[in-house]
Length: 217
Image 1: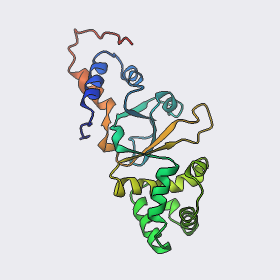
Image 2 (image 1 turned 180 degrees about the vertical axis):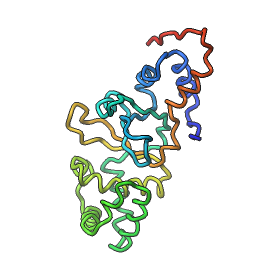
Image 3 (image 1 turned 30 degrees about the horizontal axis):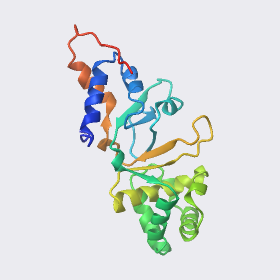
Image 4 (image 1 turned 90 degrees about the horizontal axis):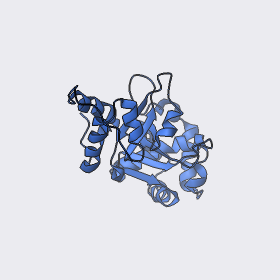
C-alpha cells in the first residue's frame, strides 16, 4: 500500500477534488499546482526510477495512445534538488573514491535500475571519474542529456543513502516548449500516493444520487 503523505491537509484537498470531479482526467487536471508529480503513461505500470514532471501539461506531451496521465501526490521534503552547490557537495564526497570504489558504488546505484546494463561499462565509469575529479558546474553538464543520464543513478544514490531522500530533482534540459521546467526522478514509486487509485476509492464511496459540483477557482 502506498504510504500516507506527510501533507494531510493537501490529501484532504485531493479527496474533496475527487468528490467534485466526474472524471479521473478532470480530477488530475485539477491537481495541477499541488504537490503532485505527473508522467505520461506507458506500459502496464509506472516503474521505479522513472522521470516525472510537476506540470501536468508537460506530462500530456509524453502520453501514449491512451492519453492517460499518471499522477502521484508527494512530500516536497522528500525531494533533493540538485543545483551546482548540491552537486558539488556530492562531488566532494565521491571524488575521494578510487576507480574500484567508484565502480562498486555505481554498481550499487544501478541495482534495480532498468538502465543499469547499458551504463555499467568502462567508458561510463571513466567519464564519471573524470567528472567527479573535475570542476565543470552541474548546470552545464545537465544540458547534455547523455551526460546527465549517467549522473542520475549516482545522484539518486547520494539522495537515498546519504540524504535519506526518495526523489531527486533538477532543472530540465528540454529545449522544447517546456524548457526550464524541473524534472524529477522517483526511486520508489510505491512510496508516493497514487491519485488515480485515490480517485477510485473516493468515487466508490460517493452515493449515485449525489451529483458532482464543479470546482471553482
